[in-house]
Image 1 (cartoon, rainbow, N blue to C red):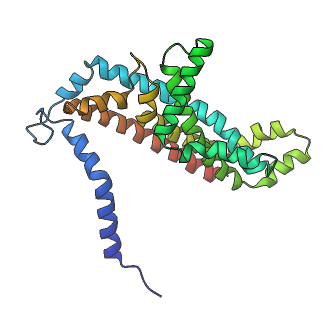
Image 2 (cartoon, rainbow, N blue to C red):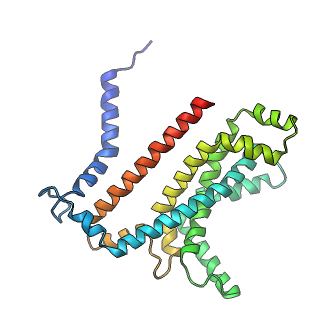
Image 3 (spheres, helix red, strand yellow):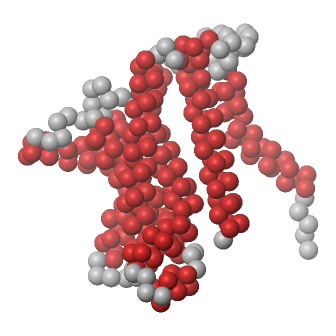
Length: 268
């Protein structure tokens, strides 16, 4: 029997984690740098956090992105949960192949193609019905839901397939309706997966540039678009401060989600 080399394992893990997290740690450290240069350290300061909270354009873009991401994640989980349930439990029915193709299409279609298609759809709707009147929060939200719903459906589908069906069958034998079984039995069991899917959809929406660039309009600039436009002129350390705050918030959410999943496993 070949024993694992502890030294080699430690070296590989160190290199892998360093590759992933050292750049993030450097970004967070330079958010406290007093210098306006991104490459030289001159001293500890909170000046960039002060300037961040005075940059109304950046704060407005961040607030818009958070709003769209929260709405997108909620809608994507609502739709994707039903789509994943159908994929996992309804078996093969007439049009099943078409249904799978429609659900998983956003996973394989390039975002450029998806963005252009949605833009053309909204343009035609505007010509025919006069709605939507220009691109804004609604158009970006629809685009992000279309993309994120496919990821949510895959996550929920895999979780439902791993469930013990005896609990649902027992509830059905006792006279519960299928809808009641879903809400009282299945839904609590897949709640951790739904939370994970919500966080995934939230992150995908918050990070999107391509679809938002096609579907955004004047006065509706998301945070990635705002940062991308500023990259061409040179980044300022206040972007590091904003990224640090976002990473702290995401880290807290991930820790809370993991603790909820562990508690759910211990109680099951």
